[in-house]
Image 1: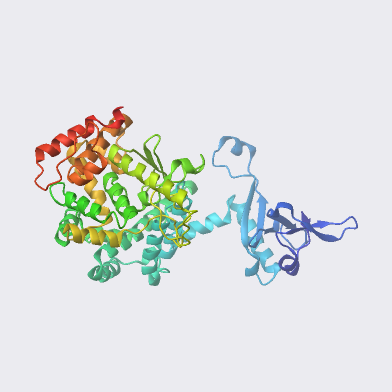
Image 2: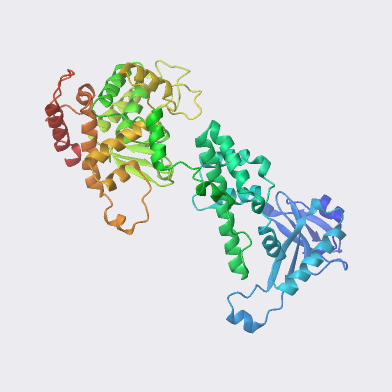
Length: 518
């Protein structure tokens, strides 16, 4: 569509709901824009450069210019780098121009660049700006890449990045090339004095953002056959000056501060399970959740949101976490490392989940006769439902206070939810292969091509899962008897003096009599 454009017409008349057209008598009329699709109106005014117009979108109107460039047919045929026949570029937001004449002048200049360089002027402008990129611009470019990649960064990741960006607010407009090593070291030390972990995380984010900007500029330079204008990351000075703690230093600090405390099968694990059983009557959902989390080694948010598979549609089963009692599988669609995770359900957890399902079905049957307005109406949906209907998620979500009581009862000094995951890791490392440990904990597999040949097969994984579960439950004869004893499996003595030999026998029997083998 072509017609004479004026600034008033563009601002006041053009919108996404209507598009201009000519009536039979030659007058401009506005007609409904079916589907509210963006459209372009080219300027037919004699003062306008060829290809100048306005693009009308859902949220803004933008002046554009396009120009057919003259490239020989031979060049187009033989060169992969030959530009397209028509180049189109943005002149600017309509609101940024005082008059349409100003927009036409800028479009005319940009069209001249197109004809002389056979390239988009915006690309040329970005190349000139690459060497002038600020830290804030590098952060923005990096954040955009995280959001637009095939598997977008999680909300937690973006939240952590945003906190790092906020700490560099006063450096946002500082060019990367102007960031001095002394200033970076001084800023790092200032933050590290108070919170070293925060300092390391914050400055690693900044370094990652600049590395991304360097790679982006390198690709642009290669495409344009020119030298890269941004080549050095000033934050590398932190590595040169050994400001980041090594793995050995971190482990030493964790041990000194008591930050990482996986339960020990020799003493604390059994006391922990016994304390859970002691609290189970008053908080069955919370205690069951902690038992399952410990035996599976899942992250704190993973098991909490589990849903019964038979209550999901086929489509929902691909995007929501579920438990299937029929196939004895648990599925997590989107874990911390952005991969799917699936595990077999060993006998002890299977019995626990089956008891939970029976209890929920009984509650559902009795609820009409004894209504409770405060109960969560979605209780039957989640494996570990929240009790209150005011819960934002609908499922159990915070075991912190319960964990505190359990620690008091079990005389355990300090314990976090992630320590329960570390407990499974510690036990698994002692009883199975490295590949199996990675599979159980859903750790990211490295790029070693041999890993594909050592991938744990599902049947073997069942055996490993059952053996580890039996070993852990045997540290608490009471819990072992509740979840595993029965039939060919002899119950364990519940006295504290129960022998190691009996525990070993129970573990062997648990593995041999697993329902997996039936």
